[in-house]
Every structure is written in C-alpha cells, then in structure tokens.
Image 1 (cartoon, one colour):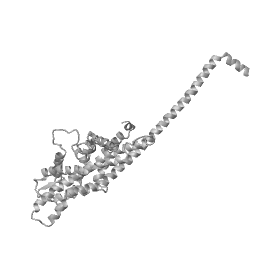
Image 2 (tube, one colour):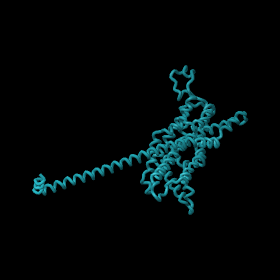
Image 3 (cartoon, rainbow, N blue to C red):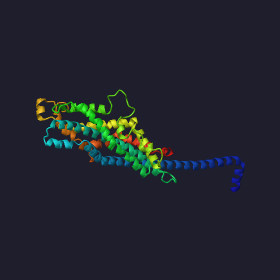
Image 4 (cartoon, rainbow, N blue to C red):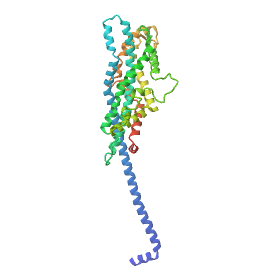
Amino acid sequence: MLRSLWSFLKRHKKKCLVLGTFLGGVYLLGKYGQKKIREIQEREAAEYIAQARRQYHFESNQRTCNMTVLSMLPTLRDALMHQLNSESLTSLLKNRPANKLEIWEDLKIISFTRSIVAVYSTCMLVVLLRVQLNIIGGYIYLDNAAVCKNGTTPLAPPEVQQQYLSSIQHLLGDGLTELITIVKQAVHKVFGSISLKHALSLLELEQKLKEIRKVVEHKDSDQVAPYSPLCHYLMPDEENPLATQACGLTERDTATIKLLNETRDMLESPDFSTVLSTCLNRGFSQLLDNMAEFFRPTEQDFSQNGSVNSLSSVSLPLAKIIPIINGQIHSVCSETPSHFVQDLLMMEQMKDFAANVYEAFSTPQQLEK
C-alpha cells in the first residue's frame, strides 16, 4: 500500500506540491489572522479599560467640584456680609434715630445689592471652579497615565495645583469688590428714586431685576463683546504678576502661568458665556421663586377678584420687600444643599460643559504640547 501511495505521489508531484503550498498558506494565514484578532481584542480591551478609568476619574472630579463649591460658600457669604453690612443699619433703626429715612434709603440699596451680588458671585464661583478643577483634573489624569514612563515631568505637580487654584481669591477679593461697586451703581439707578411706600408686585420686581442685569452685563450696549464682561471679575485683565517678572521664573511659575492662560482662554469662549448666562437666568429665577412665598394672595384678595394672579395682583410696599430681599443671601450662599446651589450644580448644560473641558485636557495629545 505504501508503494502504491508513493507511486501516486510521484505521478501527481506538481499537484501535491501546489496542494501542500496552498494548505500551508491557509494554515499560516489562519495563525496570522488569529494573532491579529487577538491584538485587536487586546487593544479594544485596553481602550475600554482606559475609557472606564477616565470616566471614573471624571465623575470623581465632578464630586470634588461640588464639594469645593459648597466648602467655599461660607467664605463668599462672609465676604459679602462684611462689605455690605446691612445688619449694622438694622441695629441703628431699632434705636429710632433722627435720620431714620436716610438709613432706610441706605438699607434699600445695600439689601438689593447684597442679594443680587450673591446670585452673580455664586454662579460665577460654580462655573469658574468647574473650569479650573476640570483643567487640573485632566492634567492629573495624564500624569497618572504617564507615571510609569521614566523621566516624565508631571504636567501639574501638587505645588503648581496649589498655586493655580489660589487664583480663585481674585473672585473672593478684588473681583468681588469691583462687582459690588458696579451692582450698587445699577441698584441705585433703578431703585434710588422709588419711594419706600411705593408698592411693587412680583412681576414688577422681576422687571426691576432685569433692568439691573442689563446695566451690569452691558446688555443695553450696541457693541457685542467677544466674551462675557463678567470675566473681568473672575480673573484680572492684566497678565498674572508672575508673567510680568523679567527673570527668576521657576518651572512651577511657568507651569502655573500656562494653566492661568488656558483658563483665561476658556473663560473667553462662547461656551463659557452661554453656560454662565444660563446659570444666571436660573439663579435669578430661583431668587424670585424664594421671594414669591411672601407675595401669596390672601383671602381678601380672592374675595375681591376670583381669578387672582399672584405675580401681578399682590403688591407689597418697598419697605416690606427690603427685609425679604436682605435675607436671601442666606439661601443663595448656603453651604447646606439648597435648591439654589443644587440647581446650578445639576444643570445639564453645566455637566456637558464640564465634560468638554475635561475631555480637552485629558487626551494624550496634551502630553505632546
């Protein structure tokens, strides 16, 4: 049988060689295909793990943002109450001084200014920290991803993070003082000539707040600014003092200046202006909702008019509105989870914006810059 098999192979030598080559090629191609499939699967698994790790880090970073905002609200509230001390005026009024009307007029301006600035500064604090901590978060993610590489210089070492995040003090210091000055001027322009006895409905009060916002946000100007005018209160217009030094900049200073410039670019972006504007609309709406509790129709209002609209029919003298607006700072700047801050933190626009900032600064391409 072996002899007949050998004879068969000799007679069909070429065919056998072709068949053998073909089968060998199929085998090698199969092995190569298996190897490539395994490599693709391993690469996809690595990408999935990396994406899951980055998603976990992002979500953790957002929780840090929320906790940081809440932790800084008492500082913001104390700074506002220190610069706009209405409590000292109310104490004077209890003693029935001779200049009672003059004190009431001062209290009117300070009370409205304080609550309006509280809305502005809280919204700005929320959005600014969201930008800063997501920029830092992106760099920290890249640093962690590159930690195994020898000789890799961290993009954001702890000392740089500390120096960079300390720039928030501008909003709590000089920026807040300038904002108070501008808002106080706008409040005086809108409410200065209104008598304390003049009655205002909630709808009229809303219109007055819109007039103040137009002045503060330059919405009545024909010239459209390329970015929100409120950015001036978040970061100084001039270059960071570190950048103005002719020499002696350390690597830490250079890295901090880079982060500050990147932050300034984000603050001057259309996306930032849109998110901040949405926050302010939500904030002032919540402020009015808080005050609406005091404008509820009474039984007498219902008896006079069966279909009462509390927004327009119920009016209060300005003298009664002042204590209400004066106390709103404790609701706006509350570190305990309040509807005001909670609404800002949970806004979908805020979440999307945060994700875009984090995405921009956590991609591997950042390492090549």
